[in-house]
Amino acid sequence: GKVEGTVSSLGLLYTNLSRGDETIMIPNNVVLSSVVVPLREPDSLSLRAHLRPDVTPSEVQALLDEHVTIPTRSEPHIGLESVDADEVVVRIAATPTNEEDGPRLADEILAAVAGVTAGGETNSEPAR
Image 1: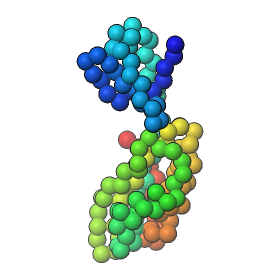
Image 2 (image 1 turned 180 degrees about the horizontal axis):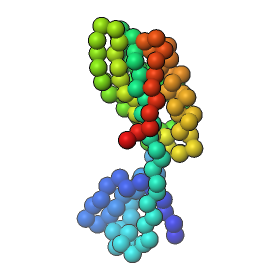
Image 3 (image 1 turned 60 degrees about the vertical axis):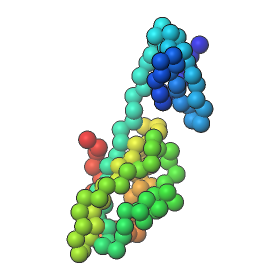
Image 4 (image 1 turned 90 degrees about the horizontal axis):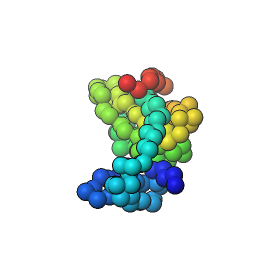
């Protein structure tokens, strides 16, 4: 039969696949004799946000947790790029679970951080 999932671990005797909260153990001899079709991962998005100087990355994470409803492959990553007296610059990276949700995910992230930006500046760029 057909089994879909993400490889979560490789062992001496079994390959474990994750599918949501479920883990499927497949004997390695079955995996080796099967056709494996890799899934194309959706493009991630990257947003560079200029925040007010009093805003912390943990506050940005809380805003994203509260406002972003689009499923993502993992929690959005917030990287600190620079800090000065006028602003804090962070890069927010996220990958939607489904590629067609990319534009809506970008919309939700922009809406989540709009209230804490310095002068309303955000710069959305394709991920590299």
